[in-house]
Length: 420
Image (cartoon, rainbow, N blue to C red):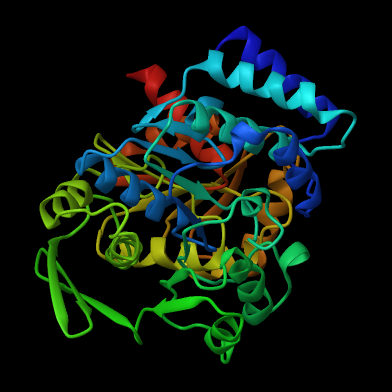
């Protein structure tokens, strides 16, 4: 990452920390009026959801690229470098155009109090417009209705799942959270729902608002059949290879992505061969990423109860003594995460993290003790110390699972790359 981009990000962080949440669309809409070239001039797919939205974006991106379309994807947060947030044809943007775009937003801000996420979202839209893509894929940052990306009207909206997360901003029930996420839908436009168990009455509410809902279990169905993914739509069967992304749940994300493709088929037709190639080629670091070695290392950004349950299911099919390197940021439900994985680890190593919203390792460890979880729970001074401790016990450890916040997974990823 360039010095100029680092300086810009530091400036934004000082003005309004990234962790600051100030939901609302009025500021971004005002800037879009001042930045007319930032508005997309091609089809837009906006993807929200508690879990799975990053996977759906990655799958859509890979399939559209396999079909020969020029793509821009905007996602958050990043793992190793900020430039990962904007991908052009699958590659992270170069720093220079991002710096120029950040400056354009600043030049037109005219004292408007943008949050960090709003500023970088507008910059991403400027970068996207400049490369003239054929499709833009936007991942919701938080919620949906009042998230900055919702200032752009999508041609297709996708909700991958609805779970209890970010309850301090989105509500304390799945219905309330689902309503916030459904705010990305538009009257007369398709909304693809990948959540298999939506809150009672939620689908009907969205349909009354005019969205053309296509929901899993009602309008389409999917199943795994050996190494094939079968999607049933209107009595038509689509047979595809299973996605290359790790995790049994990715089949559902793949089916959801394919329904979004189908909704845009008039504008961006995709042959079945490109769907198959894209599903196999899709990649997403930090999602059940498995790094071979002795011991093997798994990296997974499971930071809520549903994601932890999915990780627990994956571990159930991989026997052998396992050590956890885990922590979570402030506001995350450590108890629910711990309960989902209570009997999966021989040791829990809880490292200290630095930075905004970091949580003391002793506080996280105390919650795990109280549950209780099986295996010893130990605090460690750093992620590096946790990995070293787990590796030192390699004879009694088949794998190390690093999970929780993006920050702990990113730190582990850096250390692994340095070691290689």
